[in-house]
Length: 347
Image 1 (cartoon, rainbow, N blue to C red):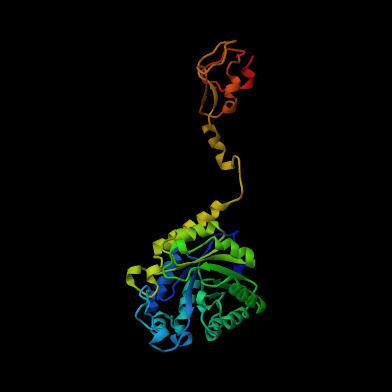
Image 2 (image 1 turned 60 degrees about the vertical axis):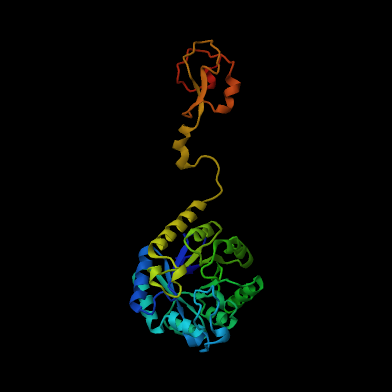
């Protein structure tokens, strides 16, 4: 499959997405600086989110609409206020996507309701992301799939049955290109709760491209996921975690994003194929193997012993596996120390 003429799949280097989310801190200038930094770090795409507080929740400040969980990054605020703080103003979208195009990156978004899809279609985005919290929102899935554009779907919290509903709905509504991202919907996530062995299982079950939406700290989990077949990596991104922001605590900084791009590509390059024996690049190193050499001058008719025959470097003589076979045999000529052992020296 392709996204904006960029091939996606295990035959190509991993597609790295920098997720801005709410890390713009309600500043368009900062949002554009994030785009610039993502491009400089080598990210292939930048993603934002398209919603308003009113399209995603109700303006209620109590009960289940108030975040009281002491372990939450957003404890002490209502959902409506959180989304007011985190949302990306719709009037910024064009400027952000234009900057992405100028810098050679793919810009796209996560819509959270049908009106967001209509708006993003006006901006001609090349693909759509479905957030983990929306992967059971089948009306939204149908709306996005009907555009015919590729869909990248995070799988956080979804059961196999729910994912089957999601993928089946998307395909029936017209989407042929789907990427499922293994995702753990905790913020930040821990490596031991990430379960990236699920990645090849997703590919087998649903016959589509797979990847990782990673909320862990650092880059190790993402690099490891490439070895399991991840062809897309999504990471939250900010200019500086110390600047704060709704998602800053689990976002990569520019130097870390640059490392992610480099190391995931290295992991992909290292996969290669099943291979044994000497590669072309290793041929010069054969000389550093041990082989059997004459270790002292010997005269014609003299017997080979542990004193005059040794296994040493370089590797130009007979292999060491013949050492015991040669002991006790006689040479047929005078042989100088340092001569590689060969069968034609035997009497």
